Image 1: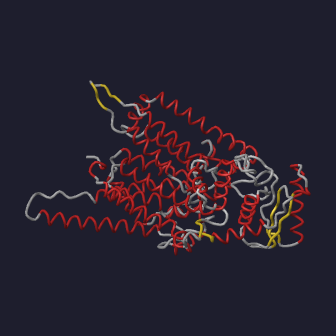
Image 2: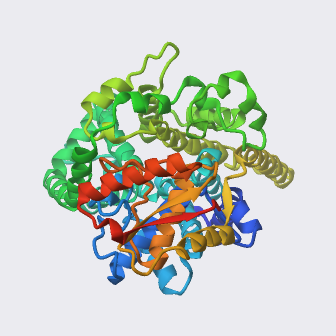
Image 3: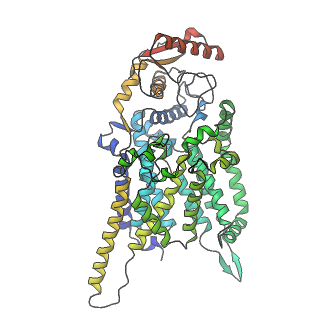
Length: 560
C-alpha cells in the first residue's frame, strides 16, 4: 500500500507543520528573535542580493534608472554588469508581491527569505512522502534536514543559495519518469510516455539556473553523472534505454525549449566572461573542499563550534565556505538508513551521484584533485569559484537516509492476536516513538548554529548618511570613506543602496566580478596621498568612458 493512501490528513499536516516550525526557528532565529529588527546575512552579500531583487522589481515597473535589466546603475557606466552575479529571476517573483504590498526593500527581503525556506521544506516533504513513499513523520524529518541543516544555515548570508526546491522538483520528476517499472503486455515490454514530467524536469533545470548558477550547474552536472551511473548499474541501463526510446520526441522538444529559454542568460553570461575573462584555476583551488571540510561545521555550531579552533580546521582558506559537515550522529544515522534501503534503484542513485560529485570536487592531501579535469572539460565549470558549495549534494542522500531510517523504525510491529496483543502493541509504539524522538532530537541538535545577521535600522542609517551627500546635479558619484577598517565591500553596498534611493548612478559596485579598468576596490581613504590615488583612478575611468568630470561627484563620509 502506498504511503499517501494510508496516511490521514491530520498526520500529514501535523508532521509537516512540526518539521517546518522547527526548521524555520533553527535557520532564522536571529531574525525572528529580534522581531525582524535584524536581517540574516552579512553587510555585503545579503545587501547585494537584496539590491538585485530590488533592481529587478524596479525594472519590472519601469522606474527611471532601472530600465535596462542587465545594466543596473552600478559600476557606472559599464553595461551588462548584472551578468557578473546571479540574476535571481527564478525566485524574484516571490519578492515582487511583498514590495507591491508596501513593504520596504529590506523588510520584503526578510519575508522573502522565509518564503524560500518554507517552499524548500514543502517540496522536500512531498519528495520524501510521495516520491520515496516515506511516512509523514519520516518525510518531515528528512525535509527538515535537507532544508535547514547547519550547512544550509551557514549559507543564508548568500541568499542566492537558499532556494533549492527546483532541484527537488527535478528529482521528483525523475522518479516519476522512471517509475513504475515497465509493464509486460503480450510478452512485449511497454513503457508509458511521461511527457508532462519530462517538461517539468526541463523547466526545473531552467528555473534553477535563473535562480542560482551554482545550484543550476550542480543539478545539470548531477544529471550527467546519473545518466552515466545508469549505464553501469544492472537493470538501470535497460530502463534508461526503454524510457528514452518511449519519450524521445518529448525529450527533444524539451531540450530545444530549455535551450531557447536559457539563451538570454547564456548570451549575457558569455558576454561578461568574454569581457572580464574566465576564472583561472588558481582562484578556484582555495575553495575546493578538503577532506576535513566534510567534517567541519564552523565556529557558529552549537555542538561542534569548539573544533573550529583546532589546527586542522584553522588552515581552511575562507573557512565559511568549507562548512560542509552534517554532525557525527547525523552522518551515521543517515548511512544506516541508506543501508536499509540499499536495494532500491532510486536510493542507489541518490547515494552514488552526490558521492561521485564530492569525490570529484575534493582536494586530497598533497594537492591532488580531479576537479582540474572537470574545470577543463565540462562547460561552465570555469565560472564556479566556490566549488565547495557542491557540498549541498551530500544533503540529499543524508536527508533521505534519515527519512528512511525513521520510516523503518516507525513501521508497526505485527503481533499475533492474543489477550496481551494490545499491551504489546502499545509498548512497541512507545519504544518506537522514543527512538524516533531521539533520532530527531540528535539530528536537530547537531544542526543548531547562530547564522550571521545585521541591524536593519543601522543599515538604513548608513545608506542615509551617504545619500545625504549626493548633489542634485550629479550625473553619477563615487563614494569613499574617511577612514574605516571594515571590508570595503560593505561600503560599496552602502553606495549602491544610496544610489538606489536617490536615483543617481554610482561608480561603486559589488558583485561576483568587476569591469575591466575598474580599480576602486579599497575605498577606505586613510590619507591625502591615498585620496589622490583614488582621484587618479577616477580620472582614468572618466577618460575611458568619456564622462564629464564636472558631473561625476566625489562623496566622502566617515564610515558607518
